[in-house]
Length: 314
Image (tube, rainbow, N blue to C red; front, side, top):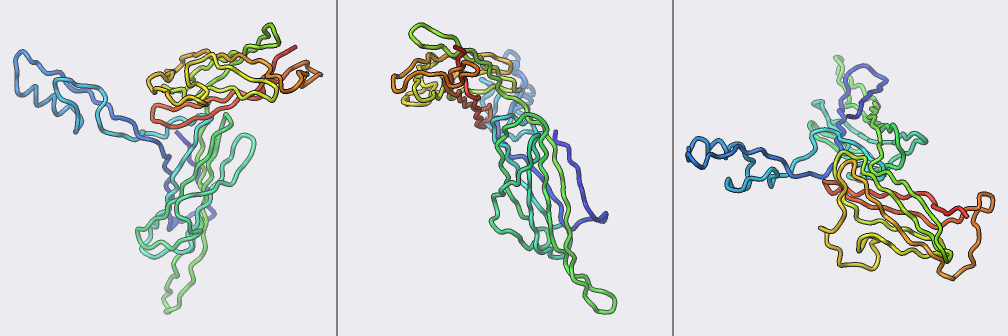
């Protein structure tokens, strides 16, 4: 769960309230129907079994744990490196007067830097909110670092003018408040690589993929982008590189449950376009390429991860 901290320069209630909701894909809701005693045929048991199922649902003769209903995650959930973090920022007018010049801005504080985020949704920079009205912005950020992240949201607005006892009007003041939402980005997929030389100037590159997330993921693409002068041959399932193969059956896509490990391999050999030479003579290392992986979570969220430059000791 993210931890929220509020910072304000004034200790009186604000006219605008801020709600932050993480955007996630829905999943199929689970149901646990009661069994029906077909031998006795009691109508009471059949009625109770119907009431224990979601509506609409499957027939009583063939109950299934997954129902046709869609449900959103009940909590914030986990944030994983390689996935897109999306939130809806909603500013609501809580006062019986119109609030003007309402503006929302956001920034992401990562372990190494602080970035100003571009906001989607309402294209207007500032809006006037009548009683009970709201304005919403969408923030998206690709998680690339492991560790603590802080989403900082700042709301600025101008209060409605106030009437004084002597029939004078006091102009509305500009107020600002800031809220911080802290969460931790974790590794969803860990990659361990190993390279070894083969006769004829070739090499074999192996990678061990382990699902560190809480739910299953479906591997869509594992590709080795080689450096100039090298070419790679995938030794994995058909269509694993995502290039030049359109007959991929979704049922053949590898599925990794939580803590499952999968081994992939590539045969790397010179393509004859350039002369073979050491890329880093100081360490006697030949750079072969970079490994790229794409996957989908159980809810269909896309994840992308790339390694650094992989090489071979010579």
